[in-house]
Structures are given as C-alpha cells and as structure tokens.
Length: 370
Image (tube, rainbow, N blue to C red; front, side):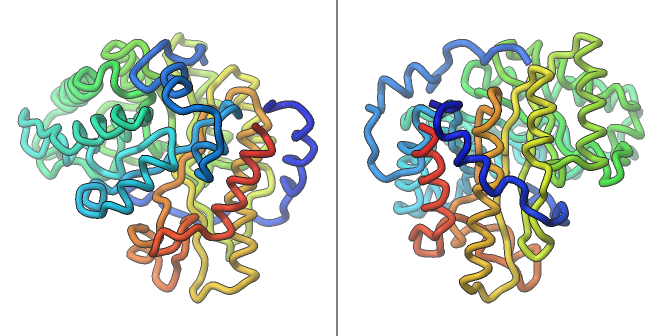
C-alpha cells in the first residue's frame, strides 16, 4: 500500500535542514521491462510474503526493490557475507567486475568470469542484476587512451564495448547504469576522454547502442551529489528532456546517495525525485551509504539513520522509484575508510554483519509502506 495510510508517516522528516554533502564515487520512461530471470513474478513465486526479518522481506509489497553492491572477492571467500547477500536483497550490483578495465583488460580480449559468477548467484537467489557501468571516465583499461586512438576509432571502440557487454548479458541484467557521472558539480559537462573525442552526443549514442543490444533492459543515467535540487541535478533534468525529445531510450535517473552527516543532509530530495517522476522516468537510489567522522557516537548514529531513511522515504513517496541500493551493507568491506581519511561506519551493518539502527530504520520504513 505504497500510497495509502503510510504517506503521512513517510513525509515526516523529509524537510531536513542542511546542504548537499560533498561526496565521491567509490570508483564505484517506458514501463518496466518484461519478464526476465528474477523478475517480479518469479520473485513473488519463490519467496512467500512472510517476514523473515530481512530487508528483502520488509520491502516486499512496496514496489521498491532493495539491493546491494557486491564485493566478489568477499562473495567467494566469506560464507556469512554470501548468505547475507542472498537473504537480505532483491537486487545485486557488481562493485567492479562489470567495469571496462575488468571485462576487457586487453583490446578484444574479454574476461566475463567474475561478472558471470555474480549473474549466476543472482539467478540462484531469485535476484535481479543492476549492471554497472558502461560509460565512465574512470576505471577504463590502461590501453584505452587518446594517444592510442583517433576519435573515430574511440567511437568504434565505445560502440563495440557497449554492444558486446550488454549483448553478453542480454536477458540477464535488469537495468544498466549506461552513462555515469557525466556532469561537474556546477552542471557543466565533465571533461572526459569521451567528451573530448566524441562531443556531447556520446551520451545519446551510448543509450541507443545499449538499447540495441538489449531492448528489454532499463537504461539509467547515474551520478553522485544529484539527490537534491542543485546545479548538477538541474543539468540532468535538462539533459533527460533533451534526450527523450530526440527519441533516445533513457528510462531512468540514478542518484547514488553517498551522504556524509558532517555536511548535513540534502533538504530537497523529494522535490527532486518528484520532478523526474513527473517526466515518466524511473528513478532509483543506486549507491547509498552514509559516512561519518570517527568515532561514532549516539548523535552520529541517529543522524546516519535519518540519512538512509531520508532517501528511502523519497523513493517510496513517488510512483516510479524502482529500487534502493546500498553501496555495500557491512563496514567489513566498505570503500569509505580507504578513500576518506578518518571516516567510516557508513553501512547498515557493522564489521560482524550485525544490524545497526540504520538497518532497523530501513526495515521499519519498508514495513510501514508495505
């Protein structure tokens, strides 16, 4: 009952004072696609609507799938981690193993091994896969440089990469982050190999090629610091309207959701999600974590819980928000301490996979909306 009696409860706390946090990538429409492996119908059939205490069970019936990014080394070596991924989540996103540097380490030489393993795991556990990411300025293979190729050759390589990767996973990946982090904070186009070599039309081309390779996959733009109304999200709003007016198959707008409580929480998230929703676009929170300056204390933990739930409430309060994904669910494998000195405790579970108040807050919000 996504829009029933719970709407008033969910709205509480959405107007949180603060500014959009400075954060970084962990580097890092049309109706929903038809029946695919692990689609809504198969999920419902495989998992009765009972509450086993997991996030996955709490989310059932809300129309929003709950997901996590997956560390493939941990999935292979850590049995409790593996069990938690299977138990807690409807969708899985590869942290790294679908990025260009991994899948094509040498020109024309593909290695799908780890990505195929994640897809097989998802199928076994009736989960959907969110592909990440097709076009990005970071984590490209070392051979892919402007010094090695002409603009025409780079365009051909990008086309081949997208057709090959999306084609390899055709029917197995529910949604793709097609173009990742294409704008600066001020809303200007990010200076990347693709912009320099191909011009701004590389974004439209990428979506067309991805749709050609798998017409049923949902195709997303994705970025950080775009959760609220600001220059960056304004740029995405304008881009979406431009692309869709030109018939480009853009289906979704992804907001990563890397928050930091010391910078405050964004106060216009619902307004922002609503405006994309009104365009008929799918929305998703794709990489949520909420970091803090260590050590943690009661006030920081409370603020973190609000940060996770602020984004979830906004998702639940619009009609076309399809998923809410955390960028890792346990501090044991979080990217945050290695990137932000003195910060951490950014996920809903601690190093021992024990739920934090943030986890319990997410479950409560899902249950109230279900």
